[in-house]
Image (cartoon, rainbow, N blue to C red; front, side):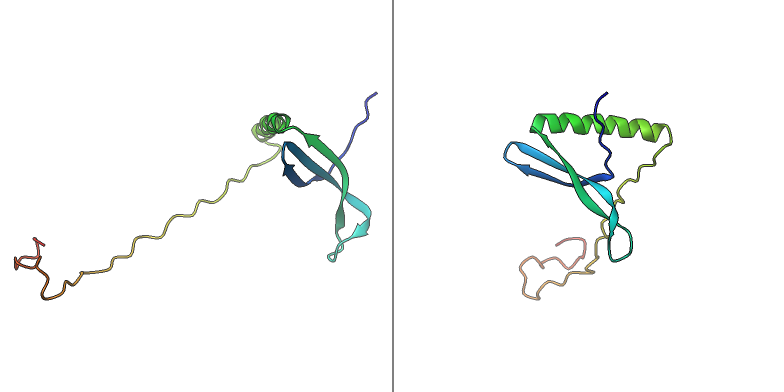
Length: 109
């Protein structure tokens, strides 16, 4: 039988040079935070080459897609923020002695 590891999640991913470190955490059975919830405590570290990490991310994305397709998890998409409408500065006044003001029509400037 192979050893298995349970984790409650990933706390941090650190990239230094050609090493990617993924710190796994577990909820402590004894330690509590200020809200009385179990604290996340370091339990294991995975160390990858950048290529192995990129491949692992792809495998996890495929697994997530399968979970979402099965309705087991729902994916939230980041909200897109619309840019504000442009501000109309109104009519632009030109100085009285501007050489472009030779024609009195507002259609030509």
